[in-house]
Image (cartoon, rainbow, N blue to C red):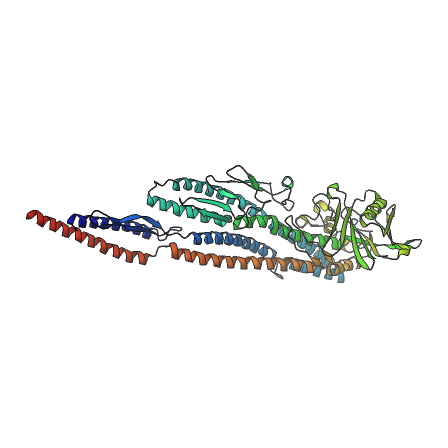
Length: 614
């Protein structure tokens, strides 16, 4: 090997060392930079005319596609779990711990105790004033909790809007980076920096939505959701968020987009296809999916439960039940009941047995044609039928006869509804018939009292007309203004009656403690729900227990996902991160190699000088 070859080899070695030093210094300078991937120089042997030499084959960037994909999935799941846990923890804080000051069960317990005190001293002004004050505190607690739930829904919607803006910006940035990466003439150092930025953007996107990333051979990426909706290929998709106005308990998502009361979210692909992201469940994980679920399902269920409690509270004191009296026509036996005074939402209860099988039917007054026909069976086995009462008892009888079919004989005259068995057939027995209406008079209509009313003092009848009176009632429930102005109405159910009469108070105490309610499921448009049943106190306890369980599960899921994400991050730090100690050790090696090559150059120069002097 001649001196020229030796000189070329030494120069090539010094060039590679110089490139290594540049990469090493870049690694150390970025050792604390989030998303930076460690770089290294790839070297290969070059073949010359008189021997081999070392040369640089380019900069290599630490990257594991499998690990990156796992990180992307874990980030989305952690973002989803964290958002749910954060909001539900705020909801639990609003509800309060059972037995704590300001909690829902404490408000009910204190109100119940005030009625007990009133029952022992109905003539005492302080006892009546105390009962009214605690009733107001109970209503205000429900108002406050309803406001908290709707506030959380509005916060979720606001964050959805912010995330949509972030996602669009991220997709546009990825589109720009894809165009630059497709240009192979880009400097290798700049290309590595762009790849780091590409992965930062993908990681940020994965926190918000669940994505699948395809890393192509030219380092560009295509991204779609796990549900298969493309977000970026050559061009980026565009997300649109259109506000539905001020969010309240009456603003719910609907399967019919024209009737939906919440902000819409659509995805317009690069090809021009537009999808409803909410109706078609485009996003299954990530913070965005969690916020949509909270706004449209979880928090709606919480509002439904509060509305059920408020409705049960109002109906406990205001319901007047009229049991049917015996009736017969020839061999047919049954019951008849006066249904006058039943307002929209009031009902008729019918129990009978047919061929030894017990059946229960609830007939609800419904005057809104949009809500009819109504015929459903609840989880408790009670069949609920909605009918218009505009035709009087005869019209109700005809409608109910058509719904129940042959067997029972139903008829109506004036305001009296009659239900008879099948007579000599002896396969049907009518066991109970009752009409339930809402007390609107403060005196002279029995002991029932409309203590809790709707806004503007309207009686709560649980009407299902329109959106339904129960919807959002927890935010509107009030103590009857007439009772606030004159607390003697808590006692005097007859004008001029003595203040020592306990009939009305005893009724309120008994109904608050013993009346059983079945609230249905509070089903949301998405089909989620939680059925409440029992006394008012038991319903409140069920709500608090259920919400506590939901929060505990959400926090547990968040902790699990964060641990999984932390494990992935640690693996990525080991695979991609810069170990300064290792880099410094590598620096020593490069310095020694550089010094060796420099020594060779020095020796070659000395030999050449010697040759020239000969």
